[in-house]
Image 1: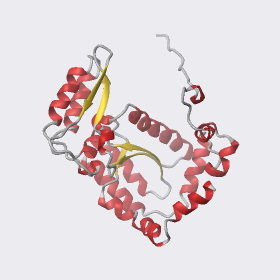
Image 2: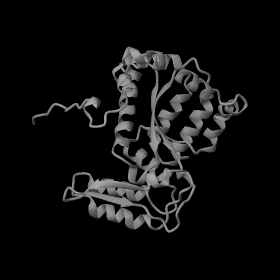
Image 3: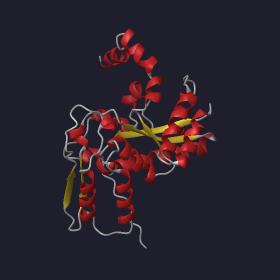
Image 4: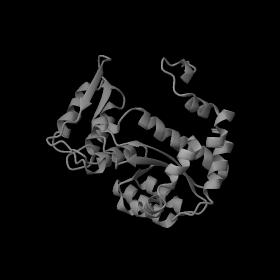
Length: 270
């Protein structure tokens, strides 16, 4: 079988190219060095950043315990094993994330997750210490309008958009409190009718049926699907009270010191 070389499209070739700051960051331009420590993407730079992160104090045991409990709650035993490694004082993590979306959200969700897994594996080999891939589910996000729909290519190659319309609109609720009702079941069936036949079609539908079902929150359904697809990925649900307790000191500083991060960002911008 002939393997075609990948096609690479430079961001500057887009009709509406991204900002120069974004492009310079990706290229590791000297112009971004004062902001992003050079913006390098090579493995040596990542290893240096991982080493620097070890100097920051963390409540590792509590963090690892909360993440282990989350993984075990989804039946993700391999991910639970990886989460336990975060209690190790030499362990670091490669973290990515996304909003909790309908049926797993856009395809780049998987691209992000697989990227975190691959980078973590390469970095662990280089460091000789645990590097855990983590996917942060933004379960406190309130933008239901943005995550209530998803699109797939149907059997005719046309874009088919599915939209979750619950019996009661979840106005002002975060994804962790948007509980899927009985209207999700026919929507999964509609997806099944739209998807073309393929090698893993039935497996994908079975996973979706098991994840997106009545009585489950939107963020939990999203997390369960990710865990099922990528067993060694640690999926972090940010709405967990045990994790929120760990951030209290940071939030307290934001309040008592008049948001130092905002002030520093403003000064850098100047």
